[in-house]
Length: 366
Image (cartoon, rainbow, N blue to C red):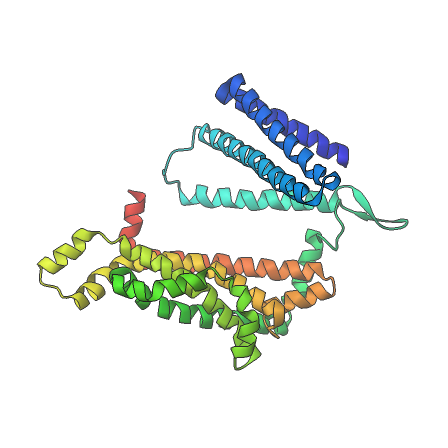
């Protein structure tokens, strides 16, 4: 196994080197390579020096070594990005912002899933490994860490026919709707007002910016104290995690409303209330729907985090219980179900976008 990894690493290194030489010439390749090797070498050398040097000087050298090593990593990152851009942009079918047919779009997405499934089957069924003395198991990875597709499918058949599972799923969806719904209901009017009037922004933005940089999961202990029941904790956490970020997105949408629309409205005799309700609100509504679509994924993250800690019910509680008893396949099934719900939610948002704002679709395809 180590020899295979070494071979793959060397093979990839040769490919990268060849691409870099072909795109940018031998000189740039040599400069980048020696720069990275020098920074890595000096960084790692300095990391081991503090153990034989006095404490104060050793700490200074350690800090310098990390700075140098970080610079090396940054160079490698930039180089990798340039190579990736070069490879993708050199493909003839790649055109900037050119739309493709729905069949091609979804076919490419299916190919990605198929590739992941093939890789999963490969590490699950090819080769073997020792799980205990004298006992061998198929696959390259222990089934406790990565169950096979067959195990996950068998667990799915068992779990999806249990009424209790759907009850937990319903509780999680209900919590999402409550926390996310309250966040949207408050963020839309406040975000429009803050984006439209600077005094309103000055009144709330410092406080909201202060709270926005606090991790929402840090509020779990306080939520347990504040919440009337333990079942309210996930909804409170979802609200905290979504509201303050959605507010910023809505403010940005309001700031991007063309000034010509406002000037024309005032010229035609509209007052401030009419401008807010008949000009700004309709103009930012497509952007708000897009922002809600983006934030629903974050809402699921905060929900599972809260339910893992102590939701008592929900899909996160199932994951926590399965993890406690090393039932990794059940964890996989639960995560896959969340992913399927995400795909369905995404499709619902796309349908609403096309149905409510058909002109936006025409603008994108133009």
